[in-house]
Image 1 (tube, one colour):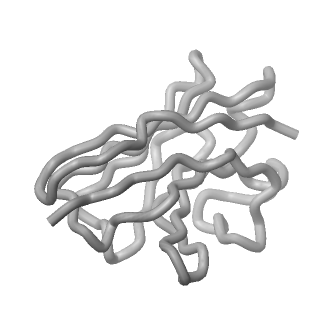
Image 2: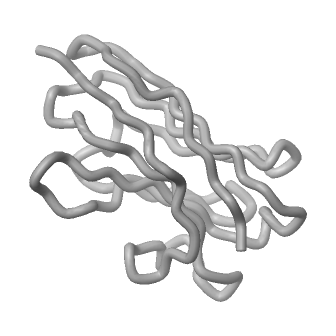
Length: 127
């Protein structure tokens, strides 16, 4: 089981950018596909982005495609979410997440397949 800690959230104006970071523990970090999820007040937690174990493959929710970029640095046990052209509807708590085990591939990252969650970091986009 990996331990995850997010950072980088904050308040930004619409059109601005933020970079979220997720620090992961464990020597087996590269065995896990990773993802970012978010949850706005009164709404269900939703998928944002996922990345393969190698970092070579990524996919995104349609709502963020073209604006957000997920990346990872396995040598540093880090996952990132670069968020550009932010909109007020992006306001949410953002969670870093790891697949339950190495059998969960990057295209299978969903709430149901997550084994580890970070504590969340608040992103607020003002209009």
